[in-house]
View 1 (spheres, helix red, strand yellow):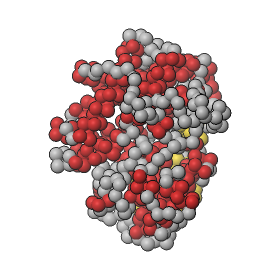
View 2: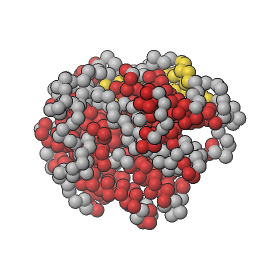
View 3: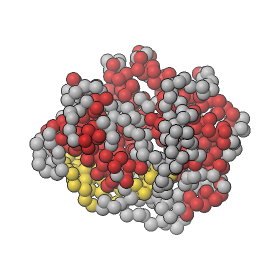
View 4: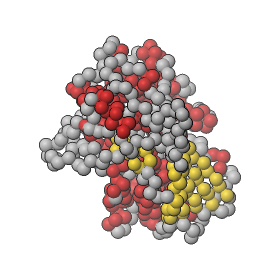
Length: 495
């Protein structure tokens, strides 16, 4: 089992450039210019841009070939049932930034660890229970069974911390927090390939479970996975931005700070930068595969910024552009793909309304309470992104199925990762889905919608068959945090 290495290749800084690796299929692309070769090998275009700081692939930093020494606890059915009976509270971006900007004080860092611990065991137990409720023959599939075992293992390594907290002994020392962070890193690494493994499992079991049941299960499961992974990665990022670890062979110099970041959340995210980077990358693959490079135009208000998770937006935009570019290439359209960025006007607060961010009175160190989780303020402005193409639109026969998991318009030969043909475009979506490939498995659009809706946004598709398609992506902001007043107050209380 992979775990947090004691000897990282480079020091973790507040926002080190990501290490994103695309599937093997990309590395076999034809030799072209050095720039295209670099991108084809998975060195994404944002590595050469200032916007690179938002794309963090944490799981690639916490790997080791040795077995884990993490203390485990054999999980009983009663423990799973008890945890699964507890309510899962919705997560908001405000929950993830309430501990303040890094570097965190010791008290705030411990508070973040205990907050993370208060959420994860319940979430894992709900997923285990959902897997148990599937037909036995489906869970018996080797791929689905592997995911089930992964969830049991993850719960087993968190239960000792959970049980101590239930006895009134929370994570109260930095040594405990470091061990807990290593455990989280193992959890993140364990579940890196959840999506493609589950996809293959359900594909192999499709004769035993209806498409409607598959879509219902996966929609709930993958949405829950987004939150679980985000909670774990947020604390890992806060830990390393507050308690730097060094490899003796690495430079002792810390990487530059980026004050707009709080963990994996960019509080001044510029969507236009991500659209440009993803657009260049998709266009490169189009040029390599098909010899055509459709034009991309960004209009509206490209300087707009808001608070969000860059990797989520990267995944969504890449998937949307991949579809737009493919339609443009196949229809032989000469019209450009137009991306319009439209910020929503901020809503005025009414008398007695809640502030944009309501920090907790103090970072919890004692027994935790789920009552600390508060919803995202509805007054927080968001951003709407429209992606318009003249690729001929979506046929009426296809349109009703675009939100179904495992629905794909690719041929059977190109359906699974590792095949040739259209994998060049498919593989682009892999990095932000947890570092693994979901190429050709038909998960792109529904998973994009899950990412968008998780924090109150959404995706709408308007197709004019025979002409083109408009995709509207709405993303919810987190409120006014650019002045740092709310976070500063929370940090001062917790110091």
